[in-house]
Image 1 (spheres, rainbow, N blue to C red):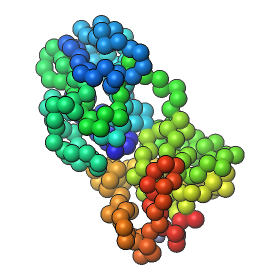
Image 2 (image 1 turned 180 degrees about the horizontal axis):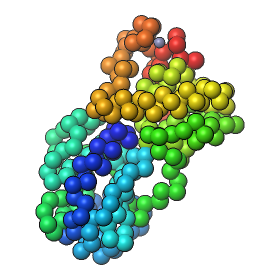
Image 3 (image 1 turned 90 degrees about the vertical axis):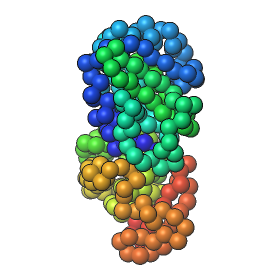
Image 4 (image 1 turned 180 degrees about the vertical axis):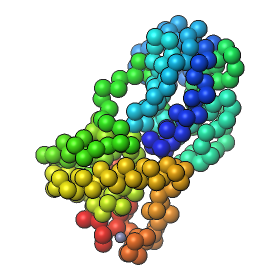
Length: 259
Ligand SMILES: [Zn+2]
């Protein structure tokens, strides 16, 4: 699924449309538009206005168009196609083939081109004036000071806390497993058991892992990834990996070096 690394790639791809003027917007299935916004209201707010800027917080992409803002959330399988070009080749759990019925939102421009959201499983959303206030700090540059309160006084698991977008924004299942594996923490461990030095190490590993996997091309490029399977072993010490559902997600970890 798209995690912040993939959404950052979408952000860069969409950047070429900055400065263009919105001609039309279509959302074939009304349910893809979040909340009670009407498509006609969205259209009157953005059509005829210039795409001025695009930002990302966590996994949320925000388009500033004239006086309005539009958010895109990519769910499990959302991809952004800009001027007919797919910005990432591979996304786990989805097909690379684009089918008409999977096109959820298209913004076309007066000058040329279009931005299209393709989302086979349709868990994503387009949101008028997206609420950013409920998102925690972006994981890309998370500091120890920002991460410390996340683990304070809570029995929630490390994995659940890292996945919680209101506490730290941008991490999904694959990045979380890679990060806990690299940093040596059991994903089931209660948050409050982490010492400040542990949190400092975790913050450092989060930043480094995002940088590393971004340069390799995606959230699915982690060292642990190919061992996330029946019979998979830890790439560090060769011990068979453990698998369980943690925080509602399929989780893999090494019972030897993660504690
Ligand atoms: Zn290990």
